[in-house]
Image 1 (cartoon, rainbow over the protein chains, first blue to last red):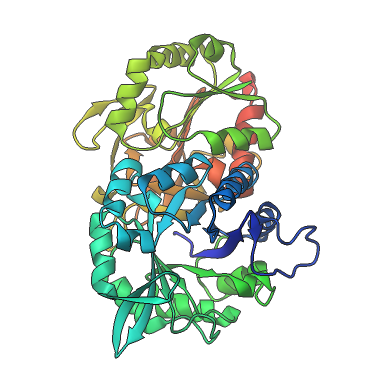
Image 2: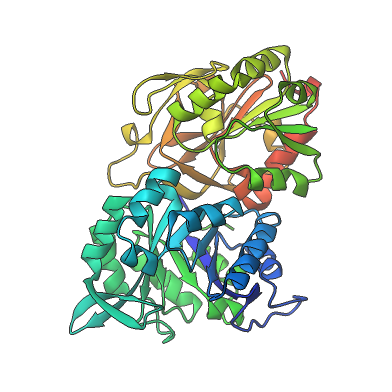
Length: 252
Length: 209
């Protein structure tokens, strides 16, 4: 029985973790390598590194950090941010990433997912979609959720899966940061539309939110969150113990 | 020393790092002399079977690997590298493998319910078969390992040392004397994965039968 995955997401700028983190026993809380090790030891099933660097110097730092993490942390690593071309896939895969997540890059370059999937396999290509309700319709947003593309989200996701996206991160802008739980309505629509793994993102505020997610929508494969893990509001080891007690298949 | 066979398939960085992390001396090589001098050999692999089998043949290393396996040198295939150990694969046609373990490789779609997603991707507990192989001496049954695959080894019951349940019992690990294989990625399976690699590194000749 495959277990439900818990995935912390780290925003990295110029080789450092951006959102302040608050952990006891961590020497350097803004070191991505230290934080990745810490999460891996706490039972994280996978890590997402999100590169929010704007400069090429920062990008070089990011890939150096990625290499160092991959040399020290032995769980799957997904990289997102700044992925616009197949050469970007190549750059991060060579540094030890296992999967690459595309967002705005897939909107700008309609062939990106197809080309990357053909080269590296579907399992390597993750579509990350920022979705928001606009007049009752789910729309895809670009540029970190700032720009409405006008694209209908479910059609977009289906299109990307047909082109070779092997996994979907559904990030609900409506629930993101609200901490009142995942966007179950949106996630159900996506789960019904595709047959690849779906990762829920946006809205988790407490342990119960993950349990509600997996109990309500058994088709969801993973839950992703950032600040609640970084600030210690939810400890991954506690979360996984509670999931296990609730009868959800969990890797302890 | 552990030698990881480099025949142009996939990125070997994580695999190499994982051996370094358990304190093993490790090298990535396409040199047959280095393979001959190694204590243990790792056959990695990702991607499509046909392409990987062809690259291995073109490199000439298939002959060396078969020869060393026949001499009793411990060999472990990982993921597609495990699938290459078998007689043949039915991934997009019919292709010959190394024939070091009896059995074949088929689509998991043949045996799992259609509602389940393919590939089988994620963490899944190991269920031991045919006793507890020395490869698992540092882990427990039920420990989870990380899988990413769409094809699985079958018709190899005697060699199966672990399965994982995903709508069916899928072959997770195999062993036949000195030849071992893991369908999952030990280098991505956290502490459990490293403990399996450590057991392989620590394995002594007399334990292999």
